[in-house]
Image 1 (cartoon, rainbow, N blue to C red):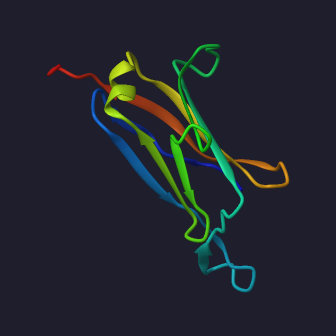
Image 2 (cartoon, rainbow, N blue to C red):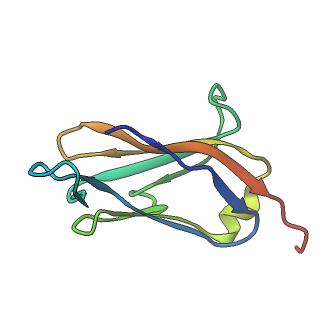
Length: 121
């Protein structure tokens, strides 16, 4: 799977929710796309100030409930609470990876993570 680029705009101090629906070419007809079955997959996402930064600004996973997967529907939902986005202080970069039950890892999306800073506190 080749990752796509999706630049995220996150508003500091608000609840953040994004839903991704993965599709893949049909084995029978590559011009037709169908739902990518995510049953048994886990996911993880990290935001860092730069690619080379050792510090993680925020980490979301299926284990910490920052990412939800609906396997049959091929949907990945990224969720951050208002407290989580409120604790962010700068923009950065991110990527989101999935891992199947056999240990195979694929990067789904990547891009910039732009923080729109909060005025009302």
